[in-house]
Image: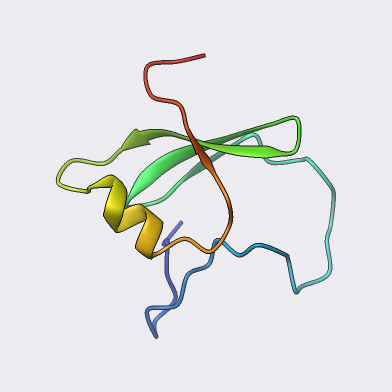
Length: 72
Protein backbone atom coordinates (compact mmCIF):
# COMPACT_ATOMS: atom_id res chain seq x y z
CA UNK A 1 0.00 0.00 0.00
CA UNK A 2 1.15 3.55 -0.60
CA UNK A 3 1.73 5.48 2.63
CA UNK A 4 0.32 8.73 1.19
CA UNK A 5 -2.26 9.65 -1.42
CA UNK A 6 -1.52 11.46 -4.70
CA UNK A 7 -1.66 14.80 -2.84
CA UNK A 8 0.97 13.69 -0.32
CA UNK A 9 -1.57 13.28 2.50
CA UNK A 10 -1.17 10.34 4.84
CA UNK A 11 -3.40 7.30 4.46
CA UNK A 12 -2.58 6.18 8.02
CA UNK A 13 -5.16 8.25 9.90
CA UNK A 14 -5.99 8.49 13.60
CA UNK A 15 -9.56 7.48 12.81
CA UNK A 16 -11.14 5.78 9.82
CA UNK A 17 -13.55 7.99 7.90
CA UNK A 18 -14.84 5.21 5.64
CA UNK A 19 -17.30 2.43 6.49
CA UNK A 20 -15.49 -0.44 8.22
CA UNK A 21 -15.82 -3.90 6.72
CA UNK A 22 -14.36 -5.57 9.79
CA UNK A 23 -12.64 -4.54 12.99
CA UNK A 24 -9.16 -5.85 13.86
CA UNK A 25 -8.93 -7.80 10.59
CA UNK A 26 -5.55 -6.42 9.51
CA UNK A 27 -2.53 -7.66 11.46
CA UNK A 28 0.26 -6.33 9.23
CA UNK A 29 0.52 -3.31 6.94
CA UNK A 30 3.39 -2.84 4.49
CA UNK A 31 3.99 0.49 2.75
CA UNK A 32 6.90 1.86 0.74
CA UNK A 33 8.14 3.48 3.97
CA UNK A 34 7.87 0.72 6.54
CA UNK A 35 6.15 -2.29 8.04
CA UNK A 36 3.52 -1.94 10.77
CA UNK A 37 1.94 -4.64 12.92
CA UNK A 38 -1.31 -4.37 14.88
CA UNK A 39 -1.72 -5.94 18.28
CA UNK A 40 -4.31 -5.27 21.01
CA UNK A 41 -5.62 -2.14 19.25
CA UNK A 42 -2.11 -0.68 18.99
CA UNK A 43 0.02 -0.05 15.91
CA UNK A 44 3.74 -0.84 15.98
CA UNK A 45 6.38 0.19 13.46
CA UNK A 46 8.53 -2.93 13.18
CA UNK A 47 10.69 -2.18 10.14
CA UNK A 48 11.90 0.79 8.11
CA UNK A 49 12.40 0.40 4.39
CA UNK A 50 15.90 1.08 3.09
CA UNK A 51 16.69 4.80 2.96
CA UNK A 52 13.71 5.79 5.15
CA UNK A 53 14.20 7.42 8.55
CA UNK A 54 11.96 7.31 11.59
CA UNK A 55 11.45 11.05 11.12
CA UNK A 56 10.18 10.41 7.56
CA UNK A 57 7.57 8.00 8.92
CA UNK A 58 6.51 10.33 11.74
CA UNK A 59 6.07 13.21 9.29
CA UNK A 60 3.84 11.14 6.99
CA UNK A 61 1.76 9.26 9.58
CA UNK A 62 -1.19 10.78 11.44
CA UNK A 63 -2.03 7.63 13.38
CA UNK A 64 -0.28 6.99 16.67
CA UNK A 65 2.24 4.18 16.63
CA UNK A 66 4.96 2.72 18.81
CA UNK A 67 8.37 1.67 17.56
CA UNK A 68 9.29 -1.98 18.04
CA UNK A 69 12.30 -2.98 15.98
CA UNK A 70 13.81 -6.44 16.27
CA UNK A 71 10.63 -8.27 17.29
CA UNK A 72 8.64 -8.32 20.52
